[in-house]
Length: 223
Ligand SMILES: C[S@@+](CC[C@H](N)C(=O)[O-])C[C@H]1O[C@@H](n2cnc3c(N)ncnc32)[C@H](O)[C@@H]1O
Image (cartoon, protein in one colour):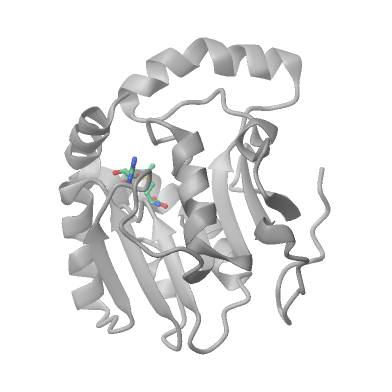
């Protein structure tokens, strides 16, 4: 998949997204945002914001920037911002793999169902790390390839088909994290079928040692 195809596919989905993926995954978005250690004045970046299902969940005492490649998805997100009068939210059309944003700028970077939907997860994760402050949180909500050999074989088999639909099924979490400065702070299974994970990472770039803020989910075990 290239950027043009991603944009085309998701702009086509936009009008039905809220009634399908939007609804099915809403509970996990709520868990993800509720578990964030958001403090007044924090800057939050959500990459691949889609139709903005998570936007009303962020507290109004933080600043949220949502980016997406698809104008179709962003149009719905803009309507949501207006409907809920989310004055603390800004939206921009931007490639998550080449963000026009400064280094070390955000306290929290969120990617909900995105790392398997982008053409190149490596550049996107590197960009998320770059724009996130040292010691900041990077949260990924996603399906990651299963450790079970049979399920992993099925995921690999169906992945080429799923790519036409705008996502892949064969990406493992350890592959995403390999060689990065990210350390998993907690990981839990979410959504009814438990095929998806909510993964909270600390950005330990520049050798930063994390200090867990009040309310941050340090209780999750890494399985
Ligand atoms: C499966 S949807 C997830 C949307 C939303 N985060 C949610 O929770 O429903 C993936 C989104 O990532 C966006 N996307 C894919 N590649 C991107 C890129 N390189 N830069 C920015 N957004 C991208 C798509 O346009 C789409 O809106």
